[in-house]
Length: 161
Figure 1: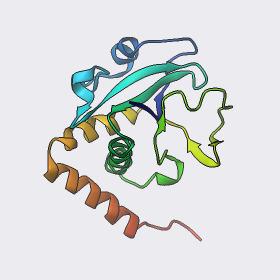
Figure 2: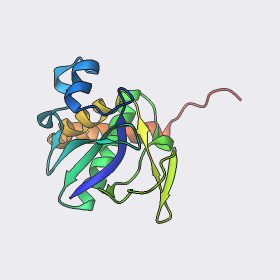
Figure 3: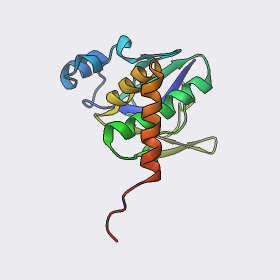
Figure 4: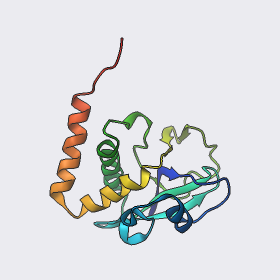
């Protein structure tokens, strides 16, 4: 099965391919948008141009919803490591079966069957999925990423008052 993740990258106003995005915007060969860089344990990532988002959406290919949900949680934890702070309030929290959002008007937050779907785009998105793929085959790394996210949730600096 394939699942929407809510994560996407933009490049230009028209349709573009993962290869065009990679050659123009990704310098690290390990993070180029090729399948071998984004293949985890029992899952992998594909990129589909989404005309509503005007970007390449990261799509999880996995056998079950539970695997996709686990991947998406690990992506959120990897985002915390990559960005150095928690971004959970603006990030997607659960996958949706591919095609289940057709006909839904895209805004920063949309609702499908009463559940909010958040879409998030950043140049850092490929690094989130790359780190998640690397960690899925290395339980020590995966554990460290999750613990870092947990510690960031427990202690969050409050700025100003």
